[in-house]
Length: 221
Picture 1: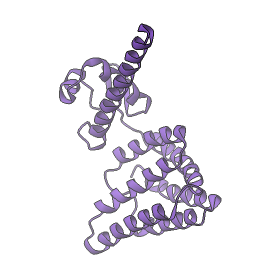
Picture 2: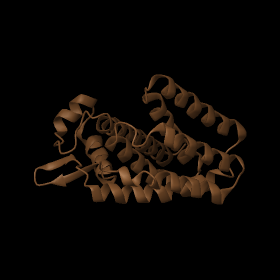
Picture 3: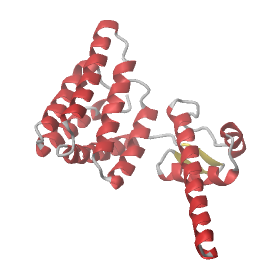
Picture 4: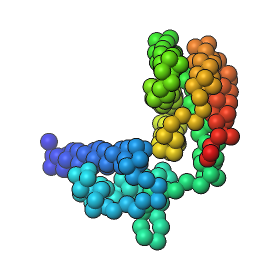
């Protein structure tokens, strides 16, 4: 093996390792934003974050830059801080999310098998019944997140997935609870699954867009 090949292999290995570390840091900070550990308007003190996660400043800086591109952080006179979202921004984000998830649903109509459809139907139904019996919305909220995230993954479109990931993070970080009652959204989820089961691309897309747009009036309340 030539020395150039060896150097090239080592370089590629380092690049892959660095990329993995940056993604890990990105995900950890994202989770801190989503769970409320980092609140909107709070300055990002890089030394504290680096010590908290246990990484050097280089992967941290790159992860912070990616979080800023995803609108989770923004730069002000005193440096980076967690974004404080205006009602206008939230509305715009939700409108874009509705269109993108509609497209994801269209793509899923030809990709979702019966087992996957049954899995999401069971997941949503069991968590909905739990809510009916106990008034505890958390299992249903988690099922809702899993359903929407799963459709994003199943779409098979990498660019669409990347765009939707940012929208999903913003949605979860902005709404700690459910924006609409399960009694409203559960039937809508079932309609989406029915369209997907039938392989009806137009109906699946329409149902998803309508499902998300129904939430717009309650945003910012």
